[in-house]
Structure formats: structure tokens, C-alpha cells
Length: 103
Image (cartoon, one colour):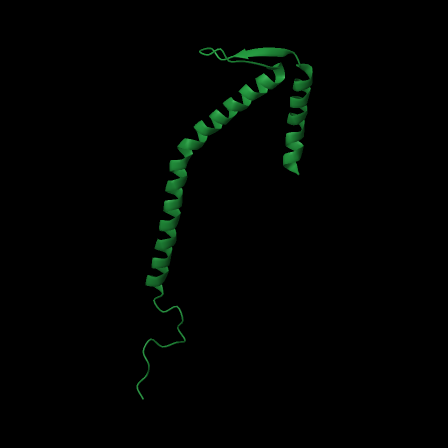
């Protein structure tokens, strides 16, 4: 619910921007002769979205190594905790004798 409340004003601003900028612009790819006619608002929002995704990728990629190290450390901690528990209490069920009593 809180996400919707935070996202709603942003979406309203995007809609207002798109409605107030309907002028057509011609987009040309420089090394080629490819051109595209599109509304100004769509052109600006597509470019902004592409750079947003590029920025997210730039932030996400370096974090991969850190998250991998954290996962490895968590596995090692779990393994060491189990080993410590085994060493401090080798018989987890004290009611069961380790060796059977002679008859």
C-alpha cells in the first residue's frame, strides 16, 4: 500500500509531462539515415528510462561480488556453528548411553 502511495505522485507527474509535450520531434541516428518521428514526451521518457536502467546496471554489477562473498561467509558461519555445537556437546541426547551396558 505504501508503494502505491509513493508511486502515485510520480505517475501523475509522468502523465502530466506526456500530456503537456505532444509536439512531434524527428529523431535521427547519426551514422545512418534512420529517422523516427515521435512525440517529444515519449522520446524524453524513453531516453530517461534507458539511462535509469544503465545506472541501475552500473550499481548492481559491483554488488554481485559483495553478495557472493556474503553468501559464502554465511555458509561458512553455519558450518562452523554446527562444528562448534558438535564439539561442545558430542552427545546431543544424554538419555541414550553411548555404549550398551554389559549383561
